[in-house]
Length: 165
Image (cartoon, rainbow, N blue to C red):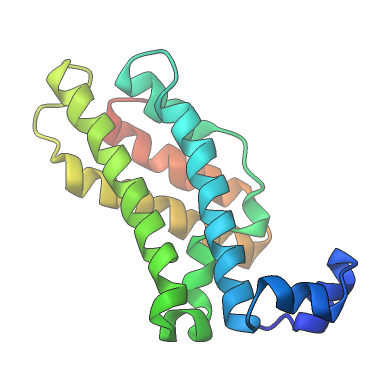
């Protein structure tokens, strides 16, 4: 929430009247931006989760896809903004997007377990939570060290859980 409405207006080449015609203020503008970011992120993920292939192939493709790691996760990074986390309306799309991601990954893990692609001992919900946590931690480590390889190492570290080497 550190970006001012004036900076947004300048970047969008919109006048103040135009902005306030669509948004009642900075919180409404922030909510629209968060919701759009969430839609874009879930859309990209869903395209991979719904693609052709086995559950394992789809999950591995998602984990290994190219990302702009040093920019961080567009949704996970919002959890570090105290203004967003303090506002239930702004926090809601962040929380629901991360829950959606855990749910979709849990579904793939369950599908893979049922098909014999993953170890039957894997708990889909816990495995999904671990995967999302590793990804988010990978973003943090990579950004802190300015080294995208740390994100790749985090992903490589969780692959044996999924039967990959």
